[in-house]
Image 1 (tube, one colour):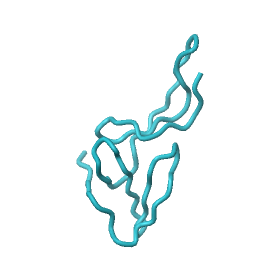
Image 2 (cartoon, rainbow, N blue to C red; image 1 turned 90 degrees about the vertical axis):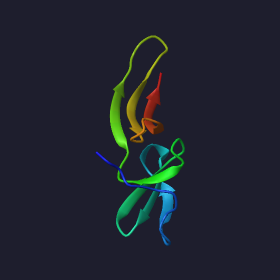
Image 3 (cartoon, rainbow, N blue to C red; image 1 turned 135 degrees about the horizontal axis):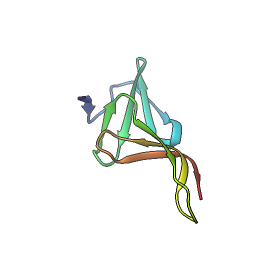
Length: 80
């Protein structure tokens, strides 16, 4: 699936942090997410994956948010 990528947000876009502290911008009911790896904004929601890593002093449990390039944008959950 092809994702629309832009370097600059439209004039009037509102910035805030979304779930998992992912940088998000809204403009006319359209969501844009910032990827520091790609150094651009992309249209749409990040890829969400559930993580249930368990073990002795390793892993985390929660939701990871990633760009379409695979770079993790944020995490909402707990580490153990």
